[in-house]
View (cartoon, rainbow, N blue to C red):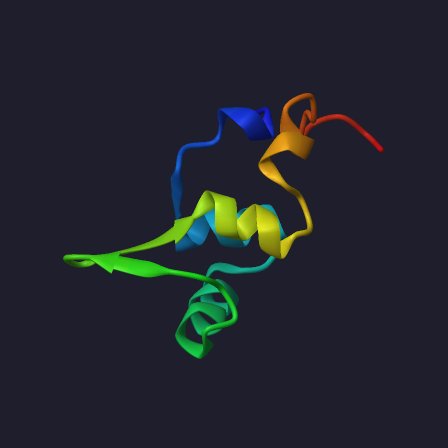
Length: 71
């Protein structure tokens, strides 16, 4: 999947997978405020733009980046 094709929000599990961390670790990071989240009813969501910012990637930087490509 190309990063530019990511949806505006991700689940905590999806964000954890992008970060390469287990599900439980992602939820602990969200609870501690280390992973940006917001809640809509019972769903805990991660804003994709904020996650990319946390990783040091601006939306403009990811236009041609393919997550499957090797560095």
